[in-house]
Length: 437
Image (cartoon, rainbow, N blue to C red; front, top):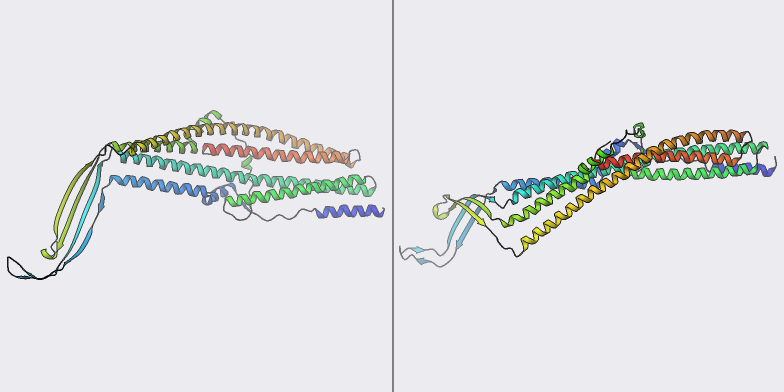
């Protein structure tokens, strides 16, 4: 063999060594259930929604307490000092000191209760309970939105793991083909152009593998952030992910989502709360009747510090027929809020229906694409086997072989994309419904 040819073969072998795959960084593996559980603890939107729910519950308790009398227990101690000149008492003729002290103290108990306030308490309590329902629905919506984000991130990792394996297989095929082309060239049965083409194909396959590794690292880092990890997190495979659901009753699912979707329930509860707030704002046209009871025990120096009781019971009525339009402005603003809430509820229902239509179509399309992609992989694999045999026998060309390899790789990628498009559409439908299907 000529020196130039030997140099060429050395260059080919060196190229193969330079593009050997790099070792991937180790990543902690989690299951989907574990990822969802951990995300519920660290997701800011869920933490905020839980805080809003606690705040709404406290407000409801506060409004319930308005039906109970307000109790206070005043305790007071005084030390009165008056100064002046000595003088004669005009009655007794006795000399009276100029400075007089009179220490005293008192204890008491007071109770105030609103007997009637134009039904303001009842309507305010109903509004707070509706806001509590809205906060609970908002928390549920946040939970399912978090589940959707984590599920999609989890599936991104799984998809990139499978794409990485596809690219590793492509690199292995390209390396094998490079070895075959090199061996044929050494034996004189092949051409130098075939070996050069094999080197280029091997480099391209390696470049795609590096891209797949980078995409996997990005997906694993994103999943780690969602579940509270600072590093990369790998996704555990589960065969149950790829089980196709039975034919969906889209009509009943649509009705269920429009009626009971977490986002719809939150909008409905908010509307109910705003309606009750509007009714509560009209209570100012009614008089307010309150009752107050008071008991005090007072003692001082002049009665030898003997506690003397005093009791008082008071009923009062307050009525304000005119408030310089402040009350009317408040009512009008509350009515505007109700109108806005009604529009938001109607739009939310239309949004849920629109998203369901989109995801039902995506689910059906992905399901069909999975079957077609599976057949395409089988056909491409068989075609590659035939073309490889033809090339080994010297009947086929290197370009036919490379084309067959590319077709198989693309068919495998398409199958993975279709499979995870189906899973993402299914996850989106579950987020809209607020339950699994």
